[in-house]
Length: 422
Image (cartoon, rainbow, N blue to C red):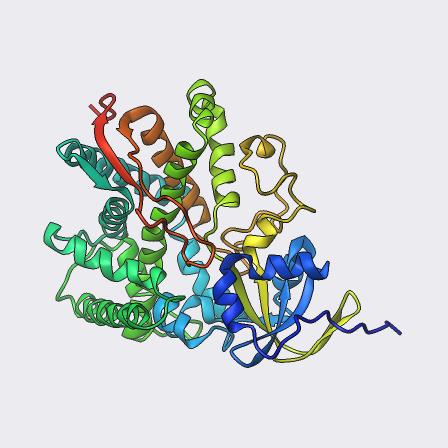
């Protein structure tokens, strides 16, 4: 009979405030202090078990042991995901709904998005060259918003782009915020959902026409396991769930600019060795903080490595900490793209957008699109545009989620290096 050990505990009544204070590093700090990849804590008055490392990630993405339904805090559902979203489903319902997303993440569809992105980059460069300086993060959100809507088959009118960008951006900028910022995020999601819901109804009634081979058409007329159309509200939520993550790539592209500014020798390597770019992109995804942790609930009671996890227990997987785990990465707090030269992806060590098999787990289906979009951004920043990075506050705090620098990255004197499509 297996011996049952007591799970190490973070002593204290409740650690919600500590989690807010330490942010991305909360779980990693406890793992280091307690010298364990599993520990128990209390968040918002509830017991939670925190996992980290490769084995912890393998356990967390075991679909037989964990569920996502009812696991997420309401504030996350009401801002980031939306009610009845694919992220909150389990089992066959999740796999079936996720196919809808995987079907639009084919190489052909991703290449189509990149073609659209290229045109938007060129147009943006023309506009940026007329200005003394730009706030790059905000510009990238707008650029990605325009590209995303064109990609799904419903191009935005130029006058509406900024409004849609602000509403979609608030969804990933406000879940961890408190007070007015959080409630503003909820209100913006509500407005966006209502607009999308009306659009779904108009497309279904032929009042608005979209191409039958478009992503929008596929989502609007998607049928569930029982062969029924999703209700208009849920269809709207899932349309948003393909738009919002595309715009959130702006955070990663911000990190690219920051890395080039903080590690100027990397620019030399990128110019000299074109094959170095994929290594650089993976290191940006590993090194900089994006998602702090993932959340699930234990389906039933079970024992893992001698520790008993009870049914219904909230479990947090340390995403940031696993990407900075010294047992997985040499010198994890140093920016070293070369580490990926001979790297073998085991699906559970590098997990900035989740772990496991993308087809069966909750790993982000848009991960490859993210990597390709970052690659295009890096190519423009290195080879197709010139700019200055003026003195500014680019410090990122580990308790701000997502971690966006105060200046939002200001670029000055942006110019085109060479024509890229003409």
